[in-house]
Image (cartoon, rainbow, N blue to C red):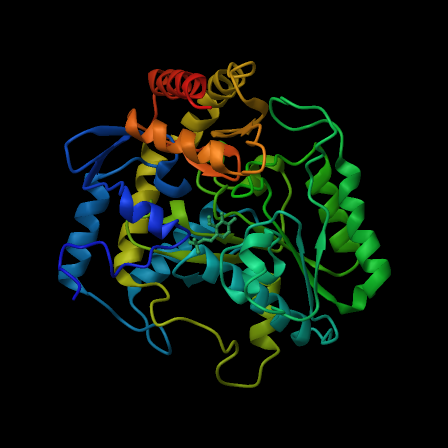
Length: 437
Ligand SMILES: Cc1ncc(COP(=O)(O)O)c(C=O)c1O
């Protein structure tokens, strides 16, 4: 029999369940930059939860908005019906999107945003008489969530290999990290724009007329922070446009200030045809994702359809009232507190502080942009990932939450942080690296 307070029944996602249940790590509270453990310890959050709590934890305004909305209208369907806040929130999000991406399709997570974007891309190509364009191209080391669409275009082998043949007709660009290239690059690498030409290889192999869309993370996050070389995204945009291929930016991590702008598209000055967002959309207080879609795509799909439903896609909880309320309050906080500008103004200090770990024990590379940094460690012989996991555990014990992926530490703190938090994070990491073998 399972006891009410036992750890047995919850099959935890992306977790070493057996290890965790022997040595659990729990949080029972959170405020601003810190989590609180059951024994009352404060843990500095260097990862904004899971790249998502950009405005910091426990924001009263968001809590109050959710509470108020739950009392007024707990749920309303958005299939052939709606509620006013759904439109208001969509308008608000469209206003922060790059010019031309003026349509918002709501869902509940980054994974759903990715699958929705891929489906919208396929529907668009069909609507404009390009029905042979069914192929979807991702990139090696890309992470696009865990739906079947997302893992098919994703390029992290552990997330794919258990789950069969996946979507037919996908392929992958080369990733943008050159292990033989320069290391410890602060910001964007200067060389490597030509890696975008790899798309020409796939066009030559498959034929442009079979390719619907290319999806990339502007800065690859979950694979361990790969920053695009200068000119790479611009070149990818030029090649996709020339071949009639839609370009999707997966901005589930990079949107909402992570790089010091509303979107990475704005930061890099490159506008794709669709952008997937989630996480910072609601400060993670209520799950929500969305796809920002160009008006041209919306027009083609809706006007090209027979009278009636135009796109046979959607979720029971698309534009859920509580998520819209949390999202409105979140966006107000971002704007009123100038958090994207704050991230921009702290990014040099953050990047320099991360690079000061060069020379620390085990560190073989450091990469960064905006308020995101990856610190790569030399793996232990025959035990990939073990060293970073030991560092993660030790940091937690010493009051710091980091994220690790493989042997890479990924830092992405809430945008409300102070310089003193940055110093504390880097000092603790240096200290832990000195202690962990
Ligand atoms: C780039 C990217 N896309 C998609 C996802 C999936 O988001 P979710 O976990 O909300 O499904 C993530 C999650 O980290 C992500 O980083």
